[in-house]
Image (cartoon, rainbow, N blue to C red; front, side, top):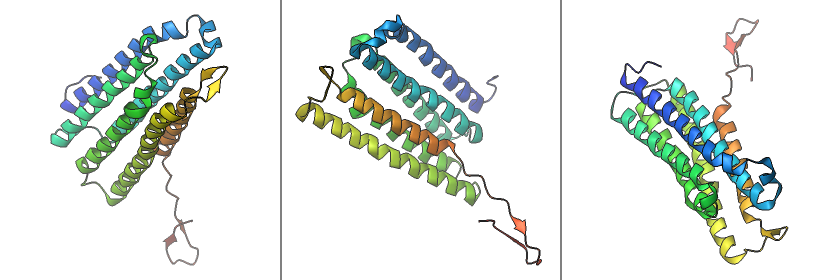
Length: 226
């Protein structure tokens, strides 16, 4: 990519930072996945699952951002600049999330569930709002599509907020869900976070295809097929 314009520079910078974050994660992965036998006990499995969840969030975020920015690149105005700043903040949260999975900080699961994931999705809401107003002059169909995507983001943010509240509660009042003598709540919440993230990406990536119109033989014109 040759960043000759501001919008090209923004895209180039974001892709570069994503690549740096993934590269940084390899250092952490080398202490969790190598040797592979590390995953064959509860503690190793829990660490591996935490990093896998972080990878899922970061990589699907990269793909989703690329799909969205290809369709609606940053405008060279205040809203486009604010959207770029929001991109940078989200990338910081991704970097922070990856680093929470390191062996030294692996006990910081509470940070992941209580505030990091809700804040990431709150940032997605801001990003969608900025894009909506940035391209408010588009066709009504496009605006309706963006409103739907905004509602989808809000609908998935709420469960992450509720999940953070539940995690805080169960770790204080119900800390004894065990697996082989170990506290298994972190596994439960990582599983629910993974399911929510996959559901969110599926909703955002699957765009309904407009049905073709067919002309009636009676010559009354075209009508929707369904």
